[in-house]
Image (cartoon, rainbow, N blue to C red; front, side):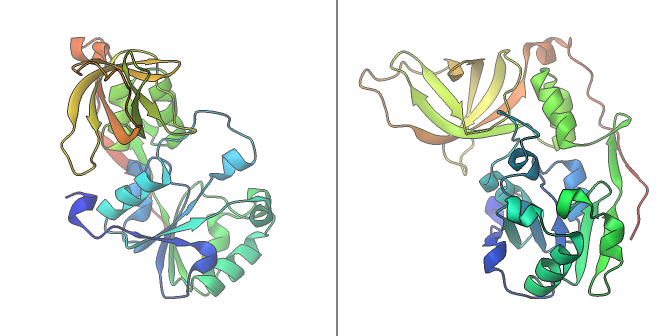
Length: 281
């Protein structure tokens, strides 16, 4: 079942939200990978941060994001989530104490009755708030999701970014639970077709990829071979020559399916063993 078979999650800005007895999962959730899905299990609403705090504080630069906000909407919809609450993260919000964030936003604004977070979740001024601070609230219950482990190491967005930048496509797909997909536009420079990823999108290793290009998210997509360069991903086959007069850029998605190492078996073997370590409520 896909997001197109379900009603898409409603996007609500935190400042516009109205209180109701939500079951809320909280996190950045960039990638909506296997670990994130464990955090979201049973939630009817998801609270995410846009832009991610690490980008606001300058801890990361340039090509970083695994998913756009729209991709996150689609992915959480597949999990049956009804609402994606977006926090417009800025320095003012970052200055709130953990106690103020809980009282003002979780309880006062959102009216939550249950909260789900990961073991490493931090919030409030200087990230001083921990899951134990959430547990101390009498206004809602808290579940701390168990860590999801693949091939002996925790699943994380950082690990997926590292795998993609190193060209370990099988590993990144196993951690995501699906092929990595970039959102962007299909365009041409008059000589060749190019897929250009969106602003701040992760830049995978500069090797050829067998990929699926989709212009309509409801469509099946087109099998293509792409090669990354400084301008984007050149689509080297099979595409007709671009029209001499050019074309208007069109929204597109590019799912990366296989590298030459994957095809020859030279890449790392995929280990589908996924475990969860511990659980607490």
